[in-house]
Image (cartoon, rainbow, N blue to C red; front, side, top):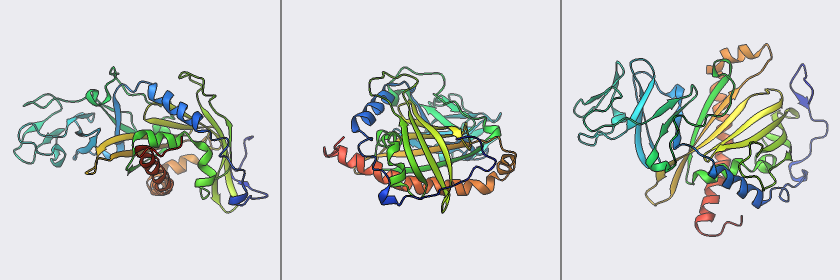
Length: 333
């Protein structure tokens, strides 16, 4: 994959979908299961992704349910994120329904105002804004030794990258989302509209105990239109139990990152787990025209959201089916 003036390639002899090389022998359930277990053994410090940093405006809070707990985040007077429980300790109102005035969150019911510090039985929670995503630390839910900051993967400088964040939800557990991402073999079969010519060139042997090189390396072409594709090499790693990172290491967009975070929301009315997929794309390039693309980010983000949404419509269907089969004891892996 030598550098090219134009990143697009023309596939000379496209292989029909049903004639591509089967990957089921390579996608060994034991390899995927062991990779999931190693990810689950890595510390998260009890940090959970809440949503996109861009979604948190100065005048409105961001309310979410994470691991069954209502939480609320807002920006203080200095612009930094603050947050805590989403239930008002006074009469149980939703804190997320109130406006933010000069960095203070005001309750709609009785006017109890919070500036991020303890007050009237309300205690703040550790929160973190990494410039792309918002995090909250829930020690009771996580049950691990706490960390001061979340495990944020190495990524391009957000100020120099084209960033977009997609959020979707499904009836499954975080493990099912992680399992989907740690199975790169399914890409060209399950998403032929997006990926072609996929080959897993290296995978964990199943005997590592959390080593840094515990990774899946993939050569794949992103489909642009017809026979036009963009070939890259990408590496998938799981730095903590609820995160999988895809990093482009060769080809167009080298250094770009796609982070997939699986955040448990809580059970639905039927007792089934609900999980949010928060996927952050940080695209970068050395090409001169990339600066123009970054300036056009407001126009490009809807397209990036649509592409991620199409992929996750399919992948969440798989994750939901995996959870259903696991919960009924029918999962073969």
